[in-house]
Amino acid sequence: MTTTKPLSGRVWDAYQRGKTWYTLTDHAAYIASDTFGRRSLKRYGMAELQAPDLQDEAPGSVYFADEIGFYHTSYMGRTRTQTKPVGFRRITDARKVYRLIASQREEHQNARSERS
Image 1 (cartoon, helix red, strand yellow):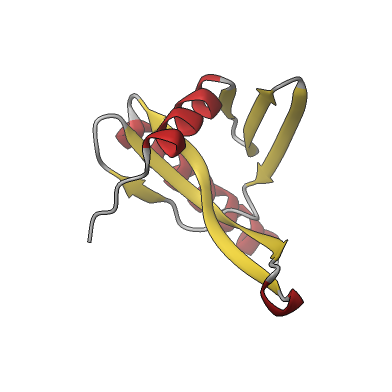
Image 2: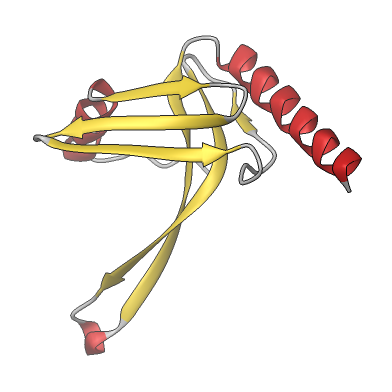
């Protein structure tokens, strides 16, 4: 099932992507953002990464973690949770990045098992 975002959601999504930078090293994946002057840098170490998930579109996305968010609703004062995928969104060479993450993750797991 394909869902489409309303125009305001697509505009916000495009704005956020324009203010987000991705870096992949042999030790971690980093996501940096600067939205309305609020800077954020998140690090996802190889030990934390899930098996990567490739969304093979043009441009593609590679997801490697989940983020759980909590929000309060006015309906009966409940706190709800929402899980959303974390990764490098709408990037060129998504297949190459997918292969890099998969191989780095595998190397990290092999190195950990050799130490045990």
